[in-house]
Length: 157
Image (cartoon, rainbow, N blue to C red; front, top):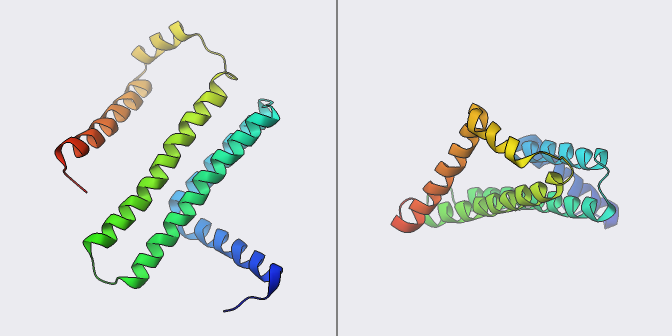
């Protein structure tokens, strides 16, 4: 399995990237979302700095997703039976992906909000009357509450 030189190493890296795209649904989702927002940033005429910030953020999400996959595969290879530590390792690894994705959402909001103008007062009225916005806000509240509940009551992980 030893590869020779730079070309072999590069080929192995490309194969690893392709493997994760083929086998991991979340990686495909992250990749397509990243591609969409990168193209949108170019379309909205982002500055070079904004494109660099967006590219670094995207790369970070994809990288952490790949590391998460590598950790999960390693745990599955080493531990065939269910072990509490193996589950915790996988949960922590998935938590890193979640944290990175939340960071990407915040960075994306900061970068894109100023490029897509909207009236805040009108927007708030739309939120109150839109079932989609209410659903989204409810999901955020439920998600935040469940995390807070797990932390406070030490339930779950």
